Image (cartoon, rainbow, N blue to C red; front, top):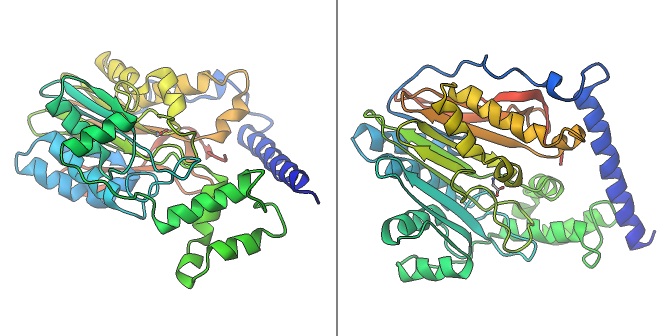
Length: 384
Ligand code: GLY
């Protein structure tokens, strides 16, 4: 079979499985559209607690670090940064910081934002390269400049001038995943995943037993481009609130693509009078509905954090009313807490591909827990 024909076969197989998944999702008897959506206004949020930290599930094991800061009277922004910088430093989290999956050119580009409720300030960086803690650069933008958002080479220069050290953010695993993605998707880097030679190609890339252990993961990220990210929100005993969101963004993105994470009002929104909200998942969908701002404004009108997250998800889903089956192609989650310490999270889909439940992490002062997000559709989704 000619190369281009194999490529078409690969894509048409993928398209076929997408169509089949969307049929499974909506089924024959479930009407597509508003009627299929859960009703907003009925979902209770969790019991109030202060101090409290809420974050995406990938921050779970670091919540104690943030809670210790809050319990000792520390600042809410320091608490959320204590959680997310550990994830940025972790080479095995390939959606954030060091080890994040790169853009289509093999370059890791990071986005991050912070908001400090008590002083009503914000800072953000977008498409920054070579700096493993963009959340700390965002905090420095907030503290040392009268700007809010610095991007690209300007953000890197700013960080270096402020004493941040540069490094190669591509790990061996993320570099091999990128090479495997190129092999699967480019006319010039064949054979692809669909080809008889695919096994050989992957064997060439995974040439030690240690690398062979990455095989399942690499095939997964090649087939399902990641929009992992971590959002973390905290309210202290006095009711002061801060938040941060940090990410390596959509894997294999076009160089310079910026998602929702550094956009104040989308990937993060904090109002010290009301509460805070943030997001993980496909940033393009969040940007279109200003999700963080929407959720805070819904809470201002009296909605619970969970209902406010579901309202944002309704708006995401509404944008696909003419072709709802396309919702199946992505995941998006929203997280929120209010000034009283009530909290909640909503996800477009109840489960990740393969059936694992979509969860978020919370520390209510007693202990850290993983809790299911309230889904808009309690089905398996994100079948990209
Ligand atoms: N939510 C992260 C991104 O889309 O970049």
